[in-house]
Length: 278
Length: 121
Image (cartoon, rainbow over all chains, first blue to last red; front, side, top):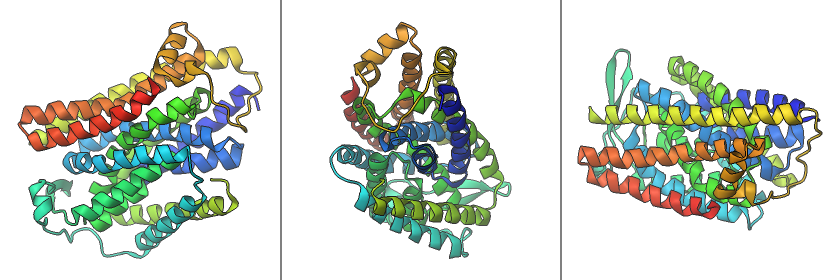
């Protein structure tokens, strides 16, 4: 393959990944890594390096649009980033030392669970909870725009969410993904934060999480500009398009898209874990 | 609410940072394709590049000599720094609001980021 052909193919793959990533709050990384390794035979280390960069582009590029819409909650995001960044550093250290087969399989199982609950969980939004004591002290509660007025919501189970966020960060650092699925799981399921607030806050957090392992990736040579350039530019365009669709999309539609995407990724992760590709 | 204003400023900063880094990456990319478009490439086996692609000083030097790979990598380093700038802005914003708890929370995040990024200096 010539440099021009490689660049063009990777750009289009990445644009598609960025679109899906922004739409679901997953980040582009989980689609970019299998696309590069399986479709183009790129070494996994280059793939996760480029993916990590794309994850930052998705998050930072889309966050500007989300902030304007008023969905993301900066206090929740910043507080939980303590857990995700520590996790990411730990994950990035581990990436250089241990085999990731077992973790890929475990992560795949977690994703299957998230996908199934996403697909078959119908009773959603509207039923907001009141904040518990810790969430009140951290001033986590907030509101988001819904049908011309502000919808109030509370937050619960902060320690459980914090623990899950450490895991999300570790997976991010280990596999070069944004691990938006686990972040959304922590906020939407554990902390009872409304889905749209969870996905947009997750997208907002993903960039900071990824930056926490990027220094280690860069120093190891995982980030090759010839691979990362088309990935980053493609993902950026796709993510900006995906963000426009998200703001207009229904929560129910989002859940189905979210469920199907993470189910496919779960199978991908498990197969790759068993065959030793990841 | 003051939070909304803070978030808007941070959002705009992020967008500007991403667009600027994308421009640098794209400029390096155009140069790279003009010079190497017909070259055979394969990324099947991993080989860590030299310090000119793995340390910030090496990358900046390579970019200053207008080498295409150095320019692309410099743009990517800028991109990596956008979330760091977002955390710095959040510290300043929370401090201006008199929100000490969240200024400290943001500072802790910055320290963790610095720990990782110092590996590539």
